[in-house]
Image (cartoon, rainbow, N blue to C red; front, side, top):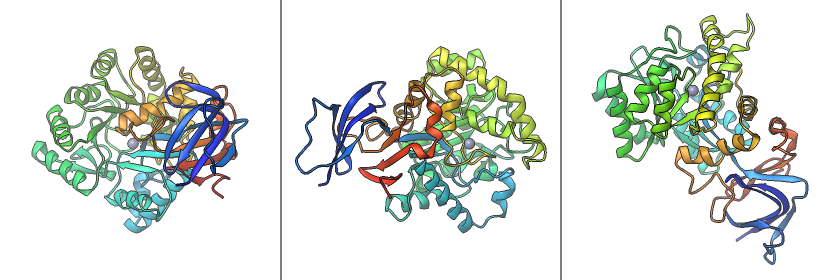
Length: 402
Ligand SMILES: [Zn+2]
């Protein structure tokens, strides 16, 4: 088995610890050892990389992307005009761009059909390159509900149950439900709840029978509360979180996936940029409240996992690191932002035994990087600083791949 030693790097291991002048030994697909240079001896015959001046961190994880959306100004219109084959090709490119930015795992929380599972398979078998995908397939929404352009509309509890089973049968690793209106779907209001608590509960029950978690889209507090009481594992966006919703989230150990980039990129678009007026107006009206909700969650100790909602207007695949910058701008330390994008994200997705930290026995999903992220988190957006992106022990992007 091939052995590689990365020597004398600064290791941010994803547990909150930083080890200066550290050695990491990678054997085959997994991490065999990690520790300071003086404690780790390099096995005979191992290939060596001099990590002086470089930072090694776990491969980053984005808990909220849509590979079927291409960050067009009007994604609803764009997706309606594409054939399934063209859409899959587009998704494949999005996956590659995400990987090149250092993201080795994503959770795709809503695609317009089941081709996300085809892409996942293609990546797993090495046919194309991209992050590991934990996909939801179709988002589950009420009739006329938000996200129906990448979802399945359902009538009542019985249909919720069967649609959850359909997603799981097709390959879903997570179930996505829509618990409030949204920004991009015309005619839906983000502060109004969608689906009943009983319907969401039915989705949670079915998902749990198959060992899957449930992610709930919710901007407004009423939708958030329904979803939390129904037993979901994460609230996506959590834009207008009131005190009661915050208390419930904390009490139920529910993750917040803030997706600050989604509202920010849509809201900052100028008149005539092509984003439908309704979407731009809704995003603009909520950005300030979104920042407050994020800051309150941080203050209250609510678990936060990183997600961008990449694919939404001007929220480009491959620019996922902008979310860390936004989280730091709103009060996180760079280390907290890195944890939200590594070990916390892995915990939310339920793959913490495999990835998310640099520890012995974990898969070697790594990002080798030139710079000091603990001082300058914005460096993470600079592609030229990426020396190597490793997935399961193999470089898949960056100069070390070429
Ligand atoms: Zn989304």
